[in-house]
Image (cartoon, rainbow, N blue to C red):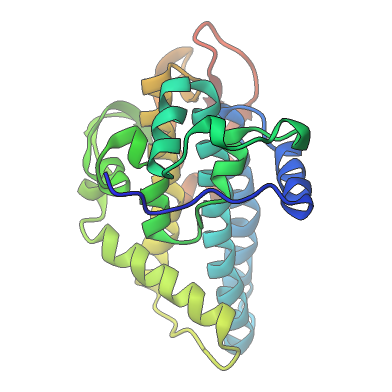
Length: 271
């Protein structure tokens, strides 16, 4: 495997940044919980603007900010998940360090009070699709996003019902093109103030759907591999499996999210 990245030196500025990031990071279930909560705030706000009938030019401004948020939300989720899984599995961390072309004993960070997984996370730009794939290569040894989107989720709850053998690709076949387009749009928005996004409702709906579902599918596969926590759906007292929130769930008020521990240490979503 040809190394693609190099690990960064733990400068004072970098150490301070990593410590700040650590303050909002707990465990894999909190990454997923935080992701859904963050998505909820911005998605709800965006759709309130749509329903309010505001001027089209102002709606365009809101959409531009929405794209920036979606990518930022991914960055936080995938960075935190990277740190957590590499912190929980010594073999995986060793493979990750090999991917970065270093030996863990070549880097002295004890005095910096940060961990190797935290430092390694700064070798990747989680606002870049290639870097996201590269960061998780040691986990899957394949195209990571391709794995997450094409592999079937054996059993899960979605739209308040149980589904079997569900995949992201079965829902949106052109997922890769859409995600790539979304990242390009975000890049143009951030780096060109003259750029104006073309209002395409169907495309935007697909983008927000994918940006919501792919991290949740990632959590499903990672939680399954490492026997970690995840959301579950309870209907009439029956656990019908890991839950995937869709945009309609985010906008709906007919469900309750209960942060508690069950027999299988999962968060519970109750409709």
